Length: 296
Image 1 (spheres, rainbow, N blue to C red):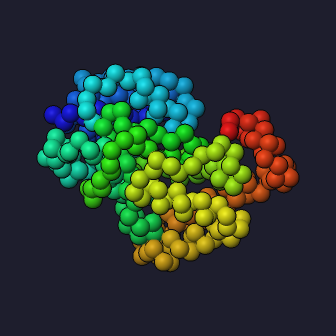
Image 2 (cartoon, rainbow, N blue to C red):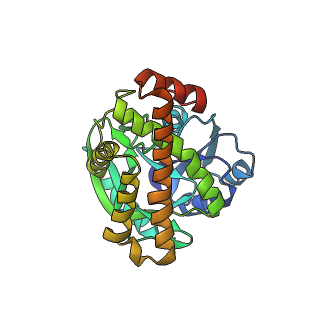
């Protein structure tokens, strides 16, 4: 049994919860499902596992919810794994954790593992390049950045290592759900880009390690590019230069919807907000608060 606790953030995840828990619960000491008062069978399903504890907290955003979990879940293990309900670990990663996690030197505080995207039932290998995320860390040595979108785990001490073994992001919901979700993401992404442009919260990339630091630097460069053109360029790079064109119809839809349509929607929101506020920093902050309940 791994000396590892898993934190799973959940909200109406009944279609994913069993798959997620079936894969991880046999190998770890404890799992904490942090539920934001689901109205479906999420809690009922989670209650069926002996080593699962359910805590409930009102949703604000991902970073706030995860940091709440770190502060309130009675974690007794040395290591913590961050997981979403629609994600699961490949068996090779579990095997490596069983073999190597107990022997990792104390100066290593976290492990970045590979993310593999599934879209419309297909593993999208091209179109994004290899992506790694800090998901395994020692208790007390990492926290989530307090951001609206694209939050990463920040180390408070120690070093980061990278493993090639992966976890899958594989959502069972349909495209209607997917587009509705990204409609919600869009205003948060717009707020994040406006934060970068106008320094609304003094958020910096300090404390990030590895690929997360380079991704944040790229996002800062993206924020300086012209509206709308940058969405097209982003799609062009992903579809033509990073191999999305070799992933069939699923690859085209992934790159178009997530890389162009979504990014254009984000830019349209930014355009509207700047139009309404005249680009005034305080007016932008007030508009986000009043119209979208986003507090920066």
